[in-house]
Picture 1 (cartoon, rainbow, N blue to C red):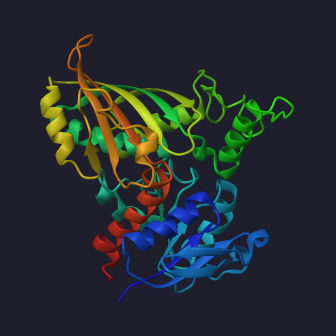
Picture 2 (cartoon, one colour):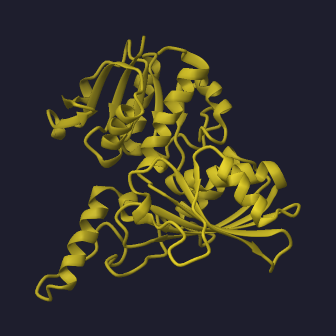
Amino acid sequence: MGYKIVVVGATGNVGREMLNILAERHFPVDEIAVLASRRSLGTEVSFGDRTLKTKDLDAFDFTGWDIALFAIGSDATKTHAPKAAAAGCIVIDNSSLYRYDPDVPLVVPEVNPEAVDGYAKKNIIANPNCSTAQMVVALKPLHDRARIKRVVVSTYQSVSGAGKEGMDELWEQTKAVYNPTKDVPPKVFQKEIAFNVIPHIDVFMEDGSTKEEWKMVAETHKIVDPAIKVTATCVRVPVFVGHSEAINIEFEEFLDEDEARDILREAPGIMVIDKRESGGYVTPKECVGDFATFISRIRQDNTVENGLNLWCVSDNLRKGAALNAVQIAETLGNRVLKKG
């Protein structure tokens, strides 16, 4: 016996990835519904070897459905997620709307699977920000061994984090560089993204940080440990898919780089590719389409006491969004619902 699954926002980048991953991981689906806004009504999407037509989100009745994977913006989620939850359908939400709600668990299954048990307060589980998700997968096994005091992270985030419109803008601006008669002014991003980097993701806050940077701090505290000090600089780069992070970690006790490498090799969801030679590391282009979070460039930082550096790369449409949501559904099934 399997589940009755709803994918909300099935025509977007993340929604389509959710459908791909549900099929790839052979999630036990008895029945599936794909929902979108009325302007996308009837759009066809793929689920394994099946082709499905989207239904109208506004008119859909969630009664009798088990799990809804939401991949729509916060405004639409605010309207539809409570309706689904009230109808008895457990919502796994990819937006930022519920991440900081104390009554809603924020879950990365490799890190805090037990947190799904708290879903019943609102019948909602939150998916973390894409940049946080891959980082905490790397931090947790090291934190368990040597207790992390402080993290300094710089992110190099792909344009797919801003949706299809962000990918289109990079593509059109890149073509325009070679066509001097064509001008493509920035609309999605604050400045031209082609052949450029932009140290600005989301809105600025009073302390000078951006909300994306604040999210990494708040979510690491909620998922891993509120005692960890985190400072982040989040940068948009001209890469279509795949987020990269340079992470500097200071521990309470010494952790040798070789032991750290061994710990990470054994940790769930992580693939260590760390050869000290040309090309002996993973780049964002190489991680696209993969489930793993890749770790490279593991080395001591001798400028601080008990310091370590590492390079972390992941497909943000997968681990940063769709994959993590499906893994939450799997964890929910194994720990709570026990079907399939």
